[in-house]
Image (cartoon, rainbow, N blue to C red; front, top):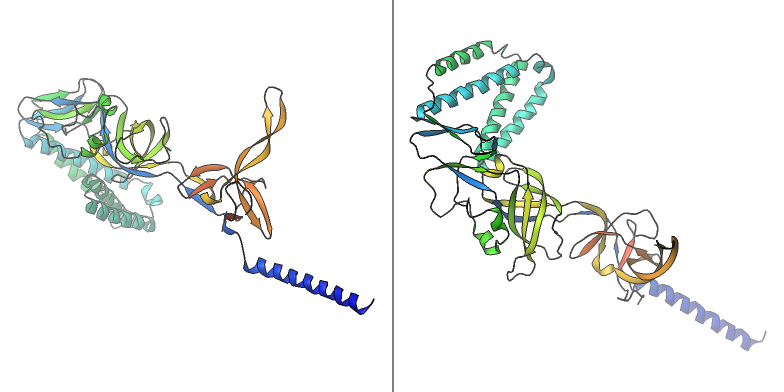
Length: 421
């Protein structure tokens, strides 16, 4: 080999080495792709809104004289002809009846506490925790102004404290206390008189001891035409004139409705969809179904009027006409995929032909993302189960052709048409 040939080969080798080094440097210091790691995520379509109660309500009137003593708690179910309230000449008889009821409740608690099984089950450490929780709840209910739950929690606290005294043998038994309460009850019974009148319900229904003026305004037929402004104008403090002869109302049927205005830009909530409703004021969660969703016809095109049907009834659900309610939709767990990473790509997929009972390859557009694996870029499918404004949730699937947890999804560097830039 002459010198000239050797020099030429050396030059070619140096050029090749330089190109190799440049290529490595470019790949190290220049990355055309911006990636985001696919991580596990939980998402749901929880929506909070102002809910307006709509029920088939009928006011109950009493035009006679006397004071009213209710025979059933709000939200209680009565059969046709059953007594909703008693009428007495004065407050004295009502106070006597209430005191007798309190004594009966206290006797029942004391008998429960000294039940032979109580000392074996309720240990001091466990009771101490219940006492602490009850005390915290009392403070919370007091600050929230929830007097009904405050009263109930106070009763629980008394039970826990008395049980603690009993199991630690500070008090051997409650026999003397029970005997004293029975004597007091007997004395009160001797002062009882029959009511001067009774107020029955005309048909089987739930009973509520007050009216708010909306009974004939917010009914089932009105729910079909309620506007967003009308829903927003409803308050717990009715400004119209109330019927002075009304002693309460009955709620007919087993179902009632809630109307509200929600923002639903993706039209996610549909007629007939099963949902759960959470009521922060009481802590209740109930099953419900969306009866109707229609445009709110306001300046905001994303606003919808939603009518929800419910069937659970209790004291808490008749204490308000309006309150904040939260729709707790199904929780979706999967892989978080940024919207900008999603590509629609033409691919051949297997499809079953029902007419010929054969499997054939069909070319169609499929949604997926490009995954960067070292220097290799691979297209993988997504199985969408939830979408938000910024991302979608893809179902976790074991097949390698689908996105897997911790894949590096390319969010830029891929064109809209699905080709690498």
